[in-house]
Amino acid sequence: MRADSIVFAVAGVLFGIIVGWVLGSQQGARAIPAAAVQAQPVAGQPAAQQSSRAVPLDQERVRALQAVAEQNPKDPQPRVQLGNMYFDAEQYPDAITWYEQAMALAGSDPNVSTDLGVAYYYSNQPDRAIAQFEHSLSLDARHAKTWLNMGIVRAFGKQDLKGAADAWEQVVAIAPDSPEGQAAKKGLEGLKNAHPPGTTGGQ
Image 1: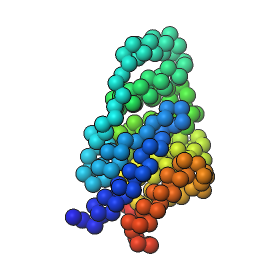
Image 2: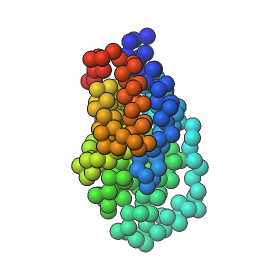
Image 3: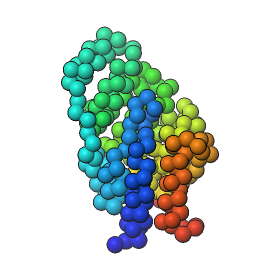
Image 4: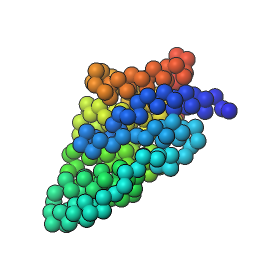
C-alpha cells in the first residue's frame, strides 16, 4: 500500500466523526454520507456510488413544485426545493439542473451556490465543485460552510491536503465555536496526526 493511501485511510476514519455536519447550505441542509467520506479517498470511487442514504422522491411533491416553478419563472425557491429533493434522493444530475436554474435567478445566494458545488462533487466533478465554491466565496468570503466543503473536496476529491488544511483554517478563523468550526478542527487534527509537521503536501 502506498504511503499516501495509508494517510487517506487515516483521514477517512477521522472524517467518520464529522459526517453529520452540513456540506451544503443551512437552507438545503446537504450532508455528506459516512460511506462516501470514508471510502472514496482509498477506493477512488465517486462519492455518489458510495452512499446508501438516499431519500425516496415524493413524486407528488415534485410535480407540485414543478408546476409552481413553471407558473413562477422568476422565482428561485421552488427550484431550490426541487434541487434539494433530488439531492437527497441522490439523483445528482437532476439536482444540478434545478440548482443551476435557481442560480440563474438568485446568483447572489452563496447557499444555493454551495449546494450546487456539492452536487458537482457528488457527480464526480471536483474541479467544478471547487470553482463553484470559489464563486460562493466571492459572494461571501466568510461563508463557513463553503470553506468546510472546500476542504473536504480538496482532501477527498483532489488529494490536496495542504489546500484542505488552508480551507479548514479559514473555517476556524471565521467561526471557531460553530459546528463547522469544530468539524474543521477535527479535520486539521486528523491531517496533523496523519502527516508529520511540514509534510502535509498537496498537488
